[in-house]
Length: 182
Image (cartoon, rainbow, N blue to C red; front, side):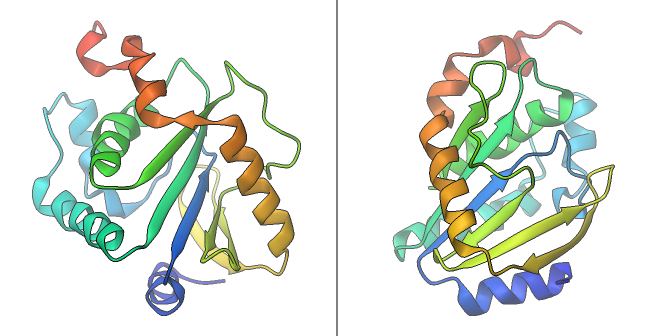
């Protein structure tokens, strides 16, 4: 299993054209958020820009150099606090920086049979990486798997069933923190 450092090295070594991500968990407990989730829940108005800005710049530069980063976020409305945080402080900003984000809302659509029941990355359409997480969403490791066709089909089915994040988010103002009552 690849550790976080080894996963980042894999990206640095193998990512030349595209990185697709399928996200399926209700919550991720990862240190890379820099405490932003807790800040969001506490009512802070914006993320830690010192932490967030370098990632947004990576997305912008990648897009300029021809690297396509895209994902499908599988979720179900109504959103929990973590998913709302992911949308407001993650996907809104990431999509503005050039990442293509799609949402498959299971309250509105069924999960296609071809979509796997776990998170994965598909790098350059040839390296499938199955992600492993604990029950609380903590990252355990990533595993390079040899089921390329299975993951390509899962990606394609998820993308077909999903809709662009911007359109989905605009249809769900009841999920925006600014429209929710405490």
